[in-house]
Image 1 (cartoon, rainbow, N blue to C red):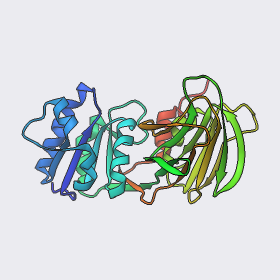
Image 2: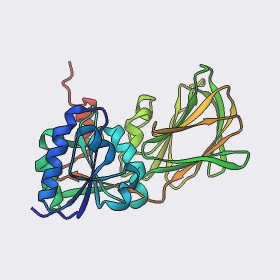
Image 3: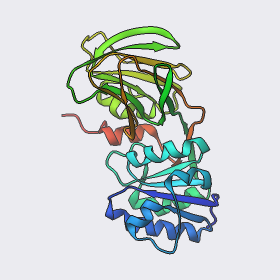
Image 4: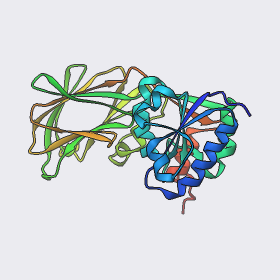
Length: 291
């Protein structure tokens, strides 16, 4: 078997001892397929892999033609934010719980990835968000988000008040626990738990989902992904903005967060036969018998 991808990087979920053996097997299989295999340094150290090439996680996108993630959606999110600037494709092997993005079963990993290395895969492009936080006209933080940008109250327990703008046009004022600005990928995460819509990953759309709004008339809305979303914190004792729950920034009154679609999409490679609706049925138990 000859791999279409010359340099393949492997990243595994941290603090998961059961990943050690699958990681070693996959490393050997990829090497036998003629690929140069790189393992991120943290994974190699945790699982005692010796005699292999290692790479810093932050540098994976620069050097790899393909990234394979062994873990759950959280691990996938963290790596996606790093490789998106380089348009490096990703494959996810599910070692987590829900696994909406990591769709290769661990038990069938070698067979399915073996076929995918030969070109038997279904590519899918997914959007990301780019966010900046501004204070007194200056950018104090910026980050990418694959799932969502979440703006919410901190530890004080009090609701926050903010204004929302779309393409610099005022939309509404809101008093609530916060707001989720979600990609289609993130629509099955925190946004779904907050009453937001499920969006197919191919949709060019962004959802704005209120978190426990004081007014019941505040409902989720879906907009085109070429819109710019902006929210301004008008009253709060304590608030933060989170990017995929991977990084965050403290907010002060009158701080602004601007969110737009990132210039690159992220390419995820699925096994042949992948069907998003199958995933929804399996993960959300839609196929369970009604009583």
